[in-house]
Length: 238
Image (cartoon, rainbow, N blue to C red; front, side, top):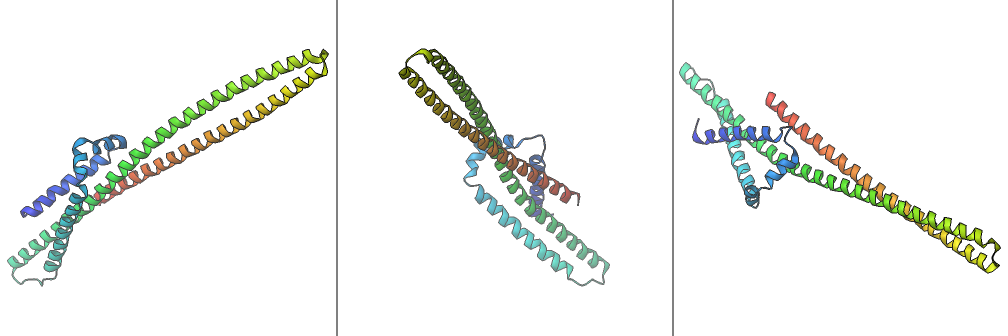
């Protein structure tokens, strides 16, 4: 095997090892995201697209060259000499081996790139889901506390007004009218309090729906990763 194909074969083995690491089930997406955002990889991130495109170009050229070699030796007529026939078959075998090495190296390089993007997106979505959950819980607790406080205040005010009304039965009509006005005011305050309660409930329901949506997207991304991992295992079995 020549030097360039030895390098490509080594690169292919490294890609297989990297794919196995990325699809390990016990390593979470958030942990891989922290690795991707480490200081060393972050310094390389500004030029990562250049490295990726250069390697794609090199692997594509080697893949095309391997196809050319396979077609070259595959279209040759059989030699009458047994030694020449064996030499031709050996060259054809090498060309086919280089074809598979270059093809799988190119394919796995694209798969690794896609896996990194999906893992980063999955980790970001998970962090957003946790933040939305905490926000929903905080909003729900605040709404419950506010409603409880308002209910206590309004109930106390209503009871006080009723007691005053009972005491004012023997007072002049002017005092009775004043009490009735206070009761009407209390009813209006209760009405506004109920409106505020409904608004807070709708806000809490909206936050819960947003959390459900984010959880569903998170589950879809996990399924995509599982499908891609299963696809890779099937391709390796083949």
